[in-house]
Image (cartoon, rainbow, N blue to C red):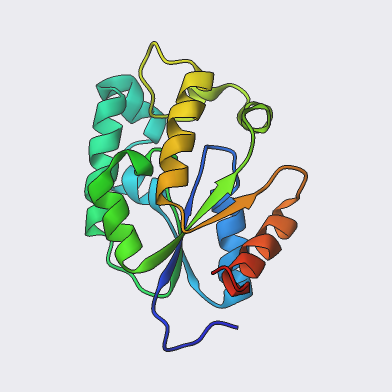
Length: 174
């Protein structure tokens, strides 16, 4: 399916609950690529969970660690699931785009809320006074700016989102 001489990565961005990790694993299997979850790399680097970082040091600390992890990431031929706040670092996104196709898994706010439930337990990088609605609006603009491809996930299951991503990569607009 994938040209073995093509070493570009497939980089997934989107809100928490959009399916980046789950769809990422499915895509890696479908395309014969490796899989990297940058949230796990952040936790490994920090020695604690994302939520613990936010609780103990604040959302800015999580974003700084995330930027450092993304800038150090040097992989080829992988599906990369990024944290929802990766798009706050222009340097990190330019680094990811330099050897990757960025796919925005776009779901509406209602579906984000349905999927993540109590967002206070998800290690979401947001200002303490920021509502989920405001965060969604702010990030949607950033996701749209960095995306090479946007795949709408509303009404689709994970396998269908995976297929939609594959289709978008082989369609003429790409």
